[in-house]
Amino acid sequence: MKLSHLMIAMLAVAGAGSAMAAADTYNLDPTHTFPSFEADHMGMSVWRGKFNKTKGTVTLDRAAKSGTLDLVIEADSIDFGLDAMNTHAKKADMFNVEKFPQITYKSNKLKFTGDQLTQVDGELTLLGVTKPVTLKVDKFKCIMHPRYKREVCGADATAQFKRDDFGLTFGLPAFSPEVKLAIQVEAIKAD
Image 1 (tube, rainbow, N blue to C red):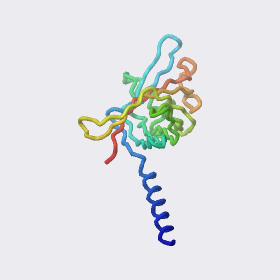
Image 2: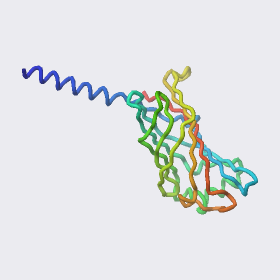
Image 3: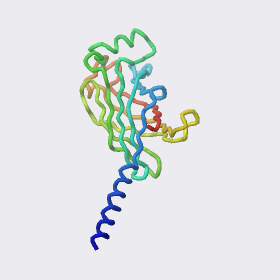
Image 4: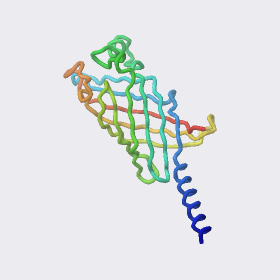
């Protein structure tokens, strides 16, 4: 009788261990991950920019349809394609990169429709202010990468938020407070 209880307990522990091990970790590929943004300029044109340096991790448990995302953006890597604008964007009245060198996005709420990742509910921290921002995942795919010989997952995600909610008020109202965010991301499965 005691032996059977011991075996049941061992099986339960083994089952719990295998469930915990179901999540895979992926490291963001900084050469394939570029958050970009756009905002309307006086109704005449749309200004676009991107950040050139990102890092982070993703965990995926596809069986449980859950995971996490931890993205770190180096604020001084901002790139409008215009040196004068890049220099100004780093100053205290915009991204204030000296005081706030990183922009972060963190989530533990990945949503799936069937096997497809479709939404990420997380928190964006910009200029020291943290607010909820939901990413809509427009594309998601994982493949065995021919060069890396490991699984690589990629996604395209979009979101909208008001930059003045984070204290980024420079140029209002000429530059719209509404910002469209797009993130192309690829992540390589960790060893």
